[in-house]
Length: 342
Ligand code: GCU
Image (cartoon, rainbow, N blue to C red; front, top):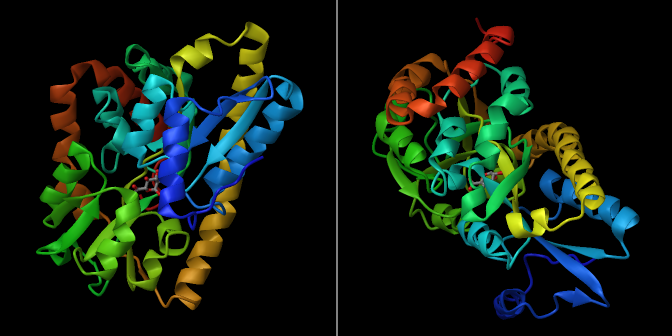
């Protein structure tokens, strides 16, 4: 297998991308190369799960396919990678659900702040085929479909030097958000100044004080080094946004039935391995952030944040009424797995 690290010189990345785009190296001794891109570091649960996928597929179909994993934005930003997956230059990539909102409005649903009442409700909803099925298939005409979801925990605000205890503390702060209309709207409502940018640019923007903070799960502090710069991480719990593994439709539809079944099993493996790894990785990230990076974790009352964003649910349903039955199904899961605080 081939592993590439972030330290690969920029020119080499550009060369690699050009090679991928031109289709060179698409054949490894008669085998079909299957390329998977993502934007996380090699020690991240997403990469660990994809490595298991690689092993699983190559053990069973290794005479036909060679899986190549490109971590750390080596194939570009998530938006670039989704476009490459649409055309088939790349076969699969991991994209945040936020980014997919700009490719299909259906994905707006999972980006809503405070959509899920608890982590249990979030997991149960994302495991519910009746909820994710119609959304995952909705981009087929655009050339790609979702094959599984990947846990990315809970998103919270973190800043270089301002403890965030309530929405009022965000006033006047420039906060990086993902490039999605929902995230910009959320930030506007909460009073901060939304600064959309790609994930790979956040560290430099924090360090150079172009932004005052960002919002993400705990892994961003350690795996991406944001905790070296940001000293306050505040559990306002505003979103649980899944990552989505998407695949090129021509590749998937071209698989013979028995091979497709093996790939499907592999996708389920990605989901289960990543979820197991995630729990351990977040625990380790919190420990490292607190004890080695000197990050202070804050636990504000989440209610004022939630109330400030509440209007977004009705706004979304007004704009996309077709999503209402799915939204209602999520509420059923919320009823079964309410927040522990209530
Ligand atoms: C998380 C998520 C990524 C996403 C990133 C971001 O790390 O797992 O898919 O790109 O947040 O904030 O952009």
